[in-house]
Length: 323
Image 1 (cartoon, rainbow, N blue to C red):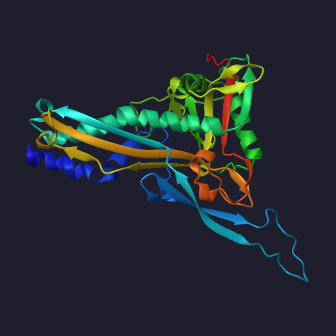
Image 2 (cartoon, one colour):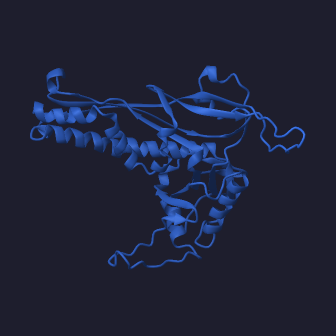
Image 3 (cartoon, one colour):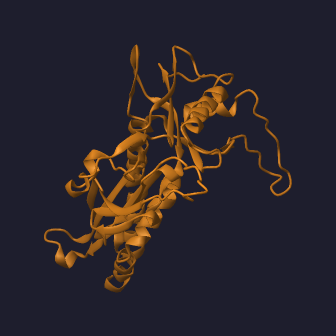
């Protein structure tokens, strides 16, 4: 068993293995942009910040030439607010024949079934809170006749806030609303017989420039106040990927055999994870601004003029019903 268990120890010694399991299981995997950060500690990362002394083009002068612009660079520290830790206890009777494979499988499965859904929900609801209420409908049912217009209203408001049509975007939509979208008027369905002539798909994978990702209805738990009616949950949210950063950081996982576990004959997996999501706000004159609860004290000295978070738009229908 000892030699077999070494397989699991070697696997979990590399935090990237669990990271890849999580990343490929996340519904929000498109938002995972770890490479934009430099990890500086167990629960902290930093991102490069730039600021310009002017925010509008300057007129060229023949006598004076071009107008000088000061570029100020620096780093802003983000604290990862989500700190998760679990220990999995696996009885020896479940691992006797293939300890290494069983321990690896159980660790991977726990990440997929427990941590990943909670991470998806946290990311989506953080963005719901950060996004402006882009458009609302009061007392109107989202139907196959209206849903395309409502999505395009959100996109138009995002474009008018400075987001480009060419920016990579994802439409996260509840499965109830996605069913309405897939039956929507003015959507053309066609069959492609070239490669797979035994399959027919009716799902919507792309809508204009947005990749469409369905999420369980209960993933949106954050409610949005829509005056004068009661608060409601969004039916979809559109995310510009360049306007969010997600960090997932697994610590080295420990695998403990029964010879070091008092009162337990089996294997224990100690798992630790830090993660967070940071909506990037548009800021004039002072670079990128993190949210108040994620910024360290030494980063708050400069005065920052926050304009908006135009990269995120949501649709709230109150009360929400899909038909």
